[in-house]
Image 1 (cartoon, one colour):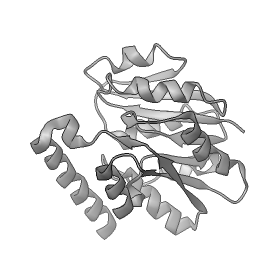
Image 2: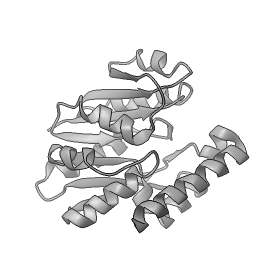
Image 3: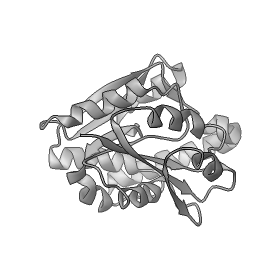
Length: 208
């Protein structure tokens, strides 16, 4: 069984090429859906250079809504979510996230960075439930679409779904892989502001 890969993207014109190339060259992928989340740069133009379905959102709605839009376009039995700012993504990483889902006993795979960059390795060791690299079976789409999510807590919401539904998961080590931090994208002040808001949203989600 092959997979649909959904890539939510916001202003990733410089980085999305490095993500789409290995995805499009992976034999286990049958379709790629890029959701352009109201980007103001050339993200959409870069995406159109590849064999992908492009979903255009008129304004930035956040990662959770972008993923929901992508799920509505899916036609496969397995779905893989990959961020658009990954560094070092290879076809082997993609296969490692998809293959366990071809077995009956695994409901979701969760990718964990290892031996990429210390800052992202450390972050995922501290909070592996914040990983954005996830695969799951089509049967979970309805559950995920109904999750109570705002702009930043989709990964935490999925982790709660795993716990509440007692889903079988498999953590997959993504060696020599990382992603661009918000501090690198937005500058130190902008990145720290984003990070503080993100963790506040996550804490609020868990409290409620």
